[in-house]
Image 1 (cartoon, rainbow, N blue to C red):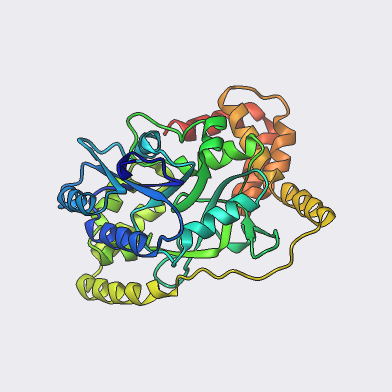
Image 2 (cartoon, one colour):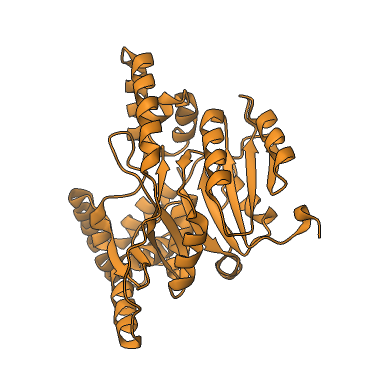
Length: 361
C-alpha cells in the first residue's frame, strides 16, 4: 500500500500561524524523536505570511508522512477540529507550534499511558517550568497524583492542548473539538476536557513525558512573535493580563538584547525534556479500585463546575446552588471564589446571567 494511503496508528495535529522559527524547531523535534509508532503529522497553516507555506511544502515533499493543509484564511483554533477531520489515526495528538522539544520516544509513552488509564479521555504531556515559561500548566495545588503502576503516573487535574492525546473512540462518543465562527482564539482544549469529564472520561497530565512549551511573552519575544501573541490574545478577554504584559514588554528598553538572552536560555533549557518513567509495582485489583475511587473523588468539583456551566448556559437553574457548592474549590482565587459562591447562593439567576455574559464575549 502507498505510504500516503495507509491508516497510521496516531495522527499528530499541529496548527500554526506566523511563527516559522518556532515551527521549524517543533517539526524538527517531532521528526527526530518519534519512534516505534506508525504516525502521520498533519500541519494546518492558518494563512501565514512569513514563509511558512514554502517551508511546509518542502517538508512534505521530503517526508511522505507529513501532510499539509494550507488555509487561505486564519481560522484560528477552529483549525483543530478541521484538521482532526483529516486525520486517519486511532490516537489523536493535539500539538501547539511552540512545543520546541519533545523527548525521544515521547509518543509511544503517551500512548502507553493513555491505554493504561481506564476511560482515559484527554491526557497532556508534562512541561518544563522555569524562568522563561511555565508551560501553561496550572499550579501544582490543582492536581491529584495517581500512580497506576508500571511507571504510569497521572497528575489528575486541568489538561491543556499544548501536547495532548485523545482517541478516535472518545471523539466519536462526545464529538469533535468545539468550533466558534468568527473567533480566532478560545479555550477549545478546556471545553473538550470538560466534555470528557461530563461523559465519564478521565483527564490529567502524563508525568513521564516532559516537553518544552515555549509559551508566554518572553519566549515569543525571543522568536520575534509578539505581534502574533497580541492578535491572538486580543480575541479572548480572559487573557487581558497577558495582553497587558506584552504591551509593557514592548515599551521597555533593551528589547533586542533581552530577546537574544532569552533565546539562548531557551535553547539551553530545551535539553531538559526527557521521558522519565518512575518504576512502580503493578496494582492488584483492590488497589486499582481504590485508586480509581480516589481519582473520581478528586475530579468531582470539576464535573460539578462543568455541569453548572452547561446548565446556566441553557438557562436551567435546577440544583444550581448544590453544584456551585461542589465546584467552589475549582477556582484558585479565594476572593473570586467567595464572590461567585455568594452570588450563586443569593441568586442562581444572576449567576447564570453573569456566566452567559462571559461566554458571549
